[in-house]
View 1 (cartoon, rainbow, N blue to C red):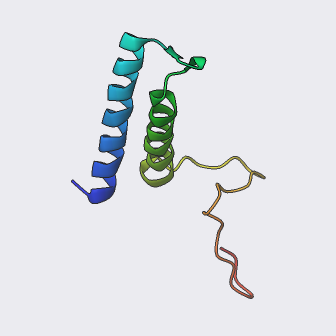
View 2: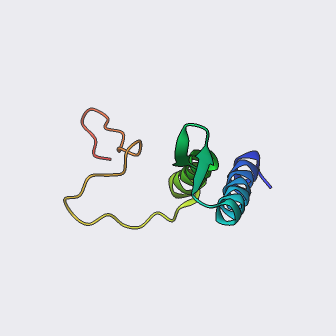
Length: 85
C-alpha cells in the first residue's frame, strides 16, 4: 500500500470515528457559556474533505472531457511552441 493511500484511509477512518462520537454525544454540546457545536464536527469535516479530495485528485478515473470544456485544475495540457498537445 502506498503512503498516499494509507493517509487517505487513516483520514477516512478518523472521520468515521469522529462521526460515531458526534452521533453518541449529539451535534450540540452544552458548555458553561451555552450550547455550542460539537468540537469534533470540524475535525470530521476536515478529514472527510481530505480523503475525498485526494481520492478524486490522485486516484479518480480520467473521464473524457466534453468538447469545449476546461481541464481540471492542475491538469492543463502542456503547450509547446508550434505543436499541439
